[in-house]
Image (tube, rainbow, N blue to C red; front, top):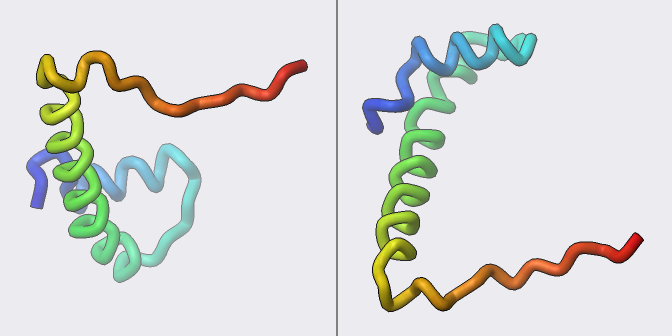
Length: 64
């Protein structure tokens, strides 16, 4: 599990978000969020490589 995502941090986030999740659901979130954070960190490191500096996300904002 990622050191950034702990049961305590999930409890804290749920409290801040006023999200009344039961304890067993909160416990299930820790491994899921931990793997997502690890994947995001890996992608961030990959995209920081100079070979990817010219790659930009395909994002189109609606015209107003």
